[in-house]
Image (tube, rainbow, N blue to C red; front, side):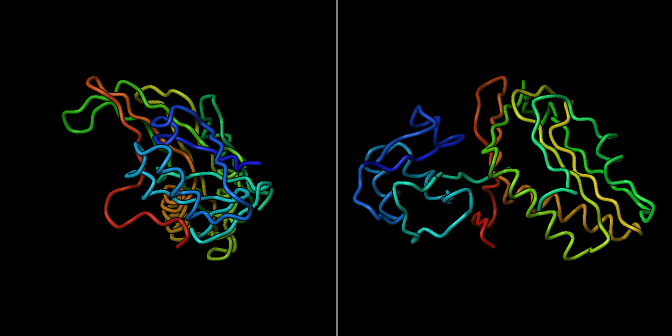
Length: 229
């Protein structure tokens, strides 16, 4: 028996596979799994130190022990109810008006829409296209988690969010988050909270293709990335 490890973004690219098998006794700790990965694939030693692990589609600590039946994933730094929330991933163009219709209600006096756009230029650097990849089931779960957190802080809020996957061109919409509240201050606050949490915990990555190269991008700058806080 062996552990099946799912890989994403830059880690998968370095290894050349989206899944690997590791032969270790059962149970094993994620620390042992990480050390074994580094031993087998020394090219990922630097990037894996920035990664977290997910077990059965939930973030967990590195000292967690796992069995062969567990779903284990290495989560690089990312770019987190059930209905009535609308949380989706799509390969198609995003329709912001449809999201606004979903959250509109008789108690809402304000609807705020955050729309993320693929920009062509960052300073002098030209982006040819972006490629988005996601850990789909966990991404949806963490999107629901964000909606739950918003409802706790702003109980009257209605939320809808979606992110596009695949190859996107400059000026394409990559993400849309729409929040409806009775008054505008709460809409601004909840909308900002939603996008900041989304960028921190939802396992979606982007690969930037420039005129002179490419790179997987995550929320890696500043303080160390930690989706558990």
